[in-house]
Length: 230
Image 1 (spheres, rainbow, N blue to C red):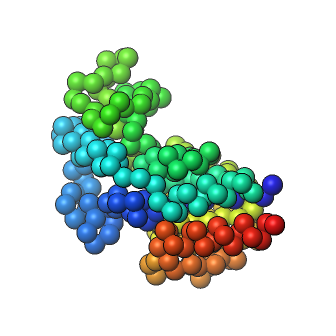
Image 2 (cartoon, rainbow, N blue to C red):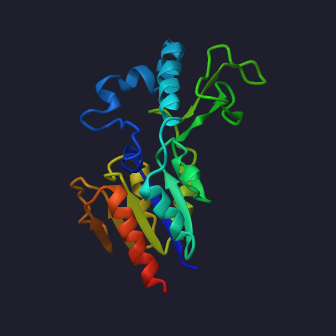
């Protein structure tokens, strides 16, 4: 069974109603990265950081997976599918995808401030100041902040290297280290990019660029791949 590796970014979640960070009306227009998305911000004003992610988590409970998420689940009927996502939501899992690797953490989880291996599910949308791990340390969002290492990038690179088909959805391939994963895929392998924005991808071999939003472009691509596998 051919292995498909799918790298997803903010664009696939945006169509479910989740606000992105980098778009013109994105969250970075309202918040400074330095204030809510760095470890220094956490040390300086943990209550502000906590509230920022509580609001993101609260919104996540109000949205649902979209057509692109469900189309990727359909691929599993004929392919071995591995999702690698830059997103911290759980929409892939809720749609039914069996294999999901989160590069940048998971919004519905918390972890110890002093021990990154102590990770816990959050009940509901609110993580409170005073919620502590078993070692007595305040729990922080289980998110990879700017300036922190991305521990899952190594297993993600290994998975990408095994791809017969590599698909990128909803990301412009400008954010590293995630953007480098497409170069880990076999040079001669088939690659697709689904994104409505102009992307500089002429340097990527064997790439088909589908300039559409995820909700329309992904179902079309999945239909094409399923038909070819018959």
